[in-house]
Length: 152
Image (tube, rainbow, N blue to C red; front, side, top):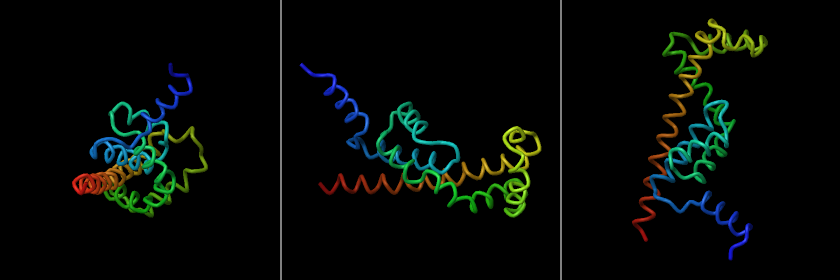
């Protein structure tokens, strides 16, 4: 007869195991990297989405923890470059607008001017940059895992 402790332990071992297909492990890692770079997302969102997409939760958690917060800061120059380019703005203009509106607080965050002139270009830039980085991470990890499995 199994105890409650053994059931809980088995649940967590099943929930956070890397024993999975190369696709599921790489997809989980890529999802974690994507959500770690995009501002405002974290471990809870990563675990929920990994569960919904039926990909590896352990690798997703590793991906989000590796990139969380510093990934956002490290990619910001590229994000402003791409977002600004797509919306006809220079990165310095986006940066200047951010510093001019930062002190206004959250009540102005979704105002029409701030949203379309500042937030939307940054969101689009983050999605493109995070998507490209996570896609590259997926393929790199997938091929590493496939090579590892073939060498056994």
